[in-house]
Length: 276
Image 1: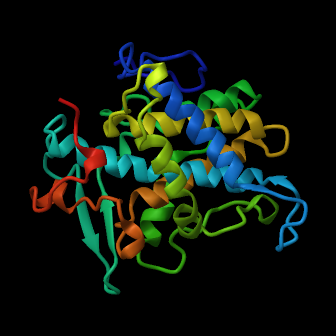
Image 2: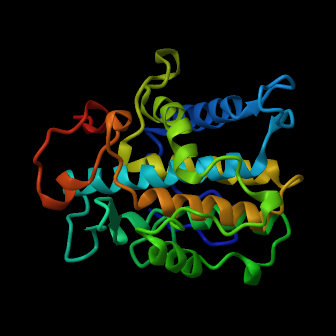
Image 3: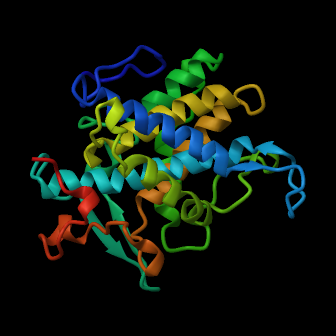
């Protein structure tokens, strides 16, 4: 698999090509269209929000989806032994209030430039931002974002995005994720129509699908939101959600990473089972 060049919109070689191109294209289209539909506010909405799509909100939403897709892909890779866990490249911590958070390159490689990274979210967003006039030297610093959110784990500040108030998403990151994930998993987990050849996207590839949609949405929103800010909002939202262990009745069919960390203690959900 070739690695994308930060700041480039050149089409990379995707891991599903060519056999999975149809399923991937169907998932990309379904995720983008359904997310836009879900986050479009009607003129008569009860909250009195401005009609249309709120750019910061949809960028935060696709970032959050990419972050959790990265957890799922990491778990799928470890469980399928595609990328076996080594040392501290995947680990968890528990805070004094009982929350669990995940860290490590097995997740980060889908989000930021890293020795293990191929096609990280950062590269897709950087290509879109540069194409819309952001100098490569002025792109958001992913290291600052990672340090800020890591430092805030277990505090009320965790998940708060550093963005001007006028460009803040309409919902907090976790609340927004809970709203849009059911839409995302339907798009990512459903098979392409039989008439188009059928087939599903491998869960190990879900972060790439979401990153492609993030790139498309950054370009689409660039007339109403500064591309550098849109990139920062999407990336920071992805980092936040990638670290959270989802629990409770609303977690199904979300996949906590305990099985990937400590062995296959629970069976894989059906949507994570590999074909063949």
